[in-house]
Image (tube, rainbow, N blue to C red; front, side, top):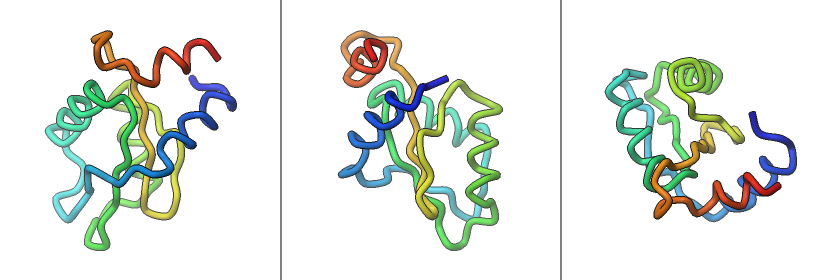
Length: 102
């Protein structure tokens, strides 16, 4: 679990990012979660967007992600979620080293 100070730092880092994943009419699947986990292994911090055609709500998406993976939802703004997962490879650890020290 992230503390408040860690979440504030991650939210600030995600501010200028654009969403790189979407939830559309196909909904939430485990294949989509695998792709999401792979992207987070390389980036550690990403944004995802719920399209207008998505049948899932923001709360359902958040619960699905947190229940089925070790990904943490840092923030939700409207239909956008900010996700964080520390990378296991040290070359990809851009944010996790700072977050651990907080």
